[in-house]
View 1 (cartoon, rainbow, N blue to C red):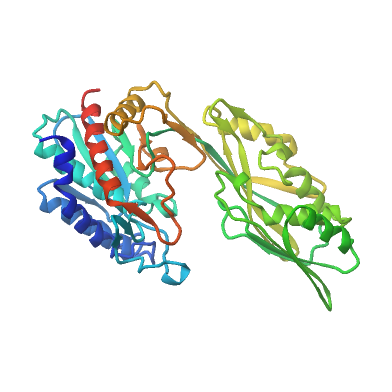
View 2: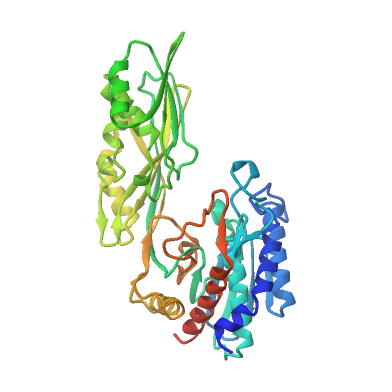
Length: 453
């Protein structure tokens, strides 16, 4: 019997397991002594571990932060690192079905986590069962590691690595096929200023999201309303201007996008300040923002515009607010995979402040990079190609970050197939049953190849 037939033989079990996991609302909850990320993530972890223990795999619960199921022997370890936590889901947010009841329609599964990342975890479970059925000699240990806090900072995997160490060869099925050999580095910063005439301002939902809406209040007779309206209309920017007794309120509505691809969004903060400046509003902070950030998303205003053969630096201004007369906002920079944080922050050194404001760097994260010719990347690529017949799509680099940054010798591999939008983090998250089975088949092939490195 070939691998595809063996995988397909577990179709009903795959659906049963995924249905049970989807039914658990495993978004981060209130931490407790025996539930570091709340009861939901803990419940999902225990459920998954019970499934694998019933199959006869060696299992362990690592302080309810993460857990694993293991097979094979040897000093070297192959890691498959997935997560069981989810982002929030509410029926009223546009779901056509109950997000916590896995629903199948014409071979398509709907529910929170069917793709990100519960579906991939179950596909990996099936892959391990098929591998065991094949009676392949295992000269390395194969370990399915399941985390519970990936969506909120990955403290789960940090704790796991501290207790259990890394793996020798690994992949996290929480990215894209045929593999992500590079993940950009990150610089997190804030800008602030007290030298402003702005009365109030609020905008954005998160630092890693392009600001979709921003509202500011300024004094009357401080800018040309006609110039402001003409500027926004000429650039197809949605806006509203309301006159109140003690000032004028301006609201700009943009388009959200992930901070790793800010060019795909319309940043309401940037267009608002650009419009005010164009309308003659004289303000040190607005000047500072427009010169240091502005409408560009390439970091040119902060002196850090750069790129390598795999991609360019991106910059996003995500959230802004005002407290005690000080305006403050967030900056999210993703820099090229072959550079380092020290070089990027060095480029910014001369542009971090002027008379209108300042930028403070809060944190940096180094990039992840594996050569496309490395044994790990070529092995996983070969597994994908053999199963799918797709020899055109090549491993990529991304602006986002995965578990791979936190555990050695690992890249993202799957779960998304090229050109597919599974509505991850949105309403009506979906995946096809056939794609989950195909994932499992690819993972079997991938493990076989990693055993031979």
